Structures are given as structure tokens and as C-alpha cells.
Length: 170
Ligand SMILES: [Zn+2]
Image (cartoon, helix red, strand yellow):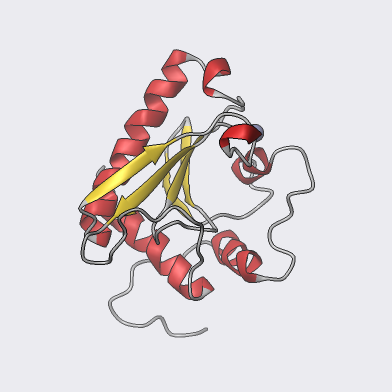
């Protein structure tokens, strides 16, 4: 068994490692079935998990506008803000706020964008409602960036998710 470097938190689950690797493979994650987020929630596809509770999952975006860019997803499928119940929306926003706070602590973010797209015309790619939580740092020059980037390596993605999980309030 490989020795874990000193000072690191707990290892990510194998599924999270597989996801990070899939994100960097030529094929990318399997998007061919109905809803990629429902498949992630069902455990059929791995993810870089940042936060989870009974109703909500937060994962790293595989094409981050800024490193730490997180998607907050309800576990029950709905497509748009217009077909998502009020109580689900309330829990999503509360989870997004937790992520904003964790980004401030773990990534020294000075601010954050919390955005949500409805329909392909608005740029919605996965038809399962999700809020984007994008950390912004003056020192890193994040202001005004909106195009998707990437992590330098699967390891960097794993470490980013780990640092956010560690910074999450109970
Ligand atoms: Zn879904």
C-alpha cells in the first residue's frame, strides 16, 4: 500500500479518483445515458464530492471557470427552476451558501458567483437543475473570467475537493 504524504486529509473514495481520471481521459465521462447527474447521485458515475446531505450533492465542475468551481445539485431530478419545488430550491441555495463559505476559507476567495441556467439557450448543458458556485479571487485575477478551464492533473482536482470538504462547516 502506498504511503500517504504527511499532512494530507483522508483519501478520496475510489469513485472520486476514477471520476477525476475520467475527466482527463480522451473520452471524458459517459454522458450517453439520460441524466448524468442522476447517474452520479445513484453512484453509477464517480464525482469529486465537495458536500453532501440528505437532499443535496455538491461536486466539482470538470471544466472549472475557476478552480474550486462547484455544482450544487438536488438528489431528486428536476430540470429547470420552474419545475423545482420551493423547498428544494431553498435547500439548494442554503447548500450553495455553505460552499461559498468553504471556498472563502479553503481557496482564499474574496467573492463568488452563484448562477443557474435554464434551457440550452441559456447555456444549460445537463438538464438536471444545478447551481454553479464559482469562487473569485482578486489576487489570482479571477474577475470577469467565464470560460471553462481544467485542472492541471487529476491529483490537483482531488486535492481541491478535499480542501473544500475539510473547510465545510458542520
Ligand atoms: Zn437527473
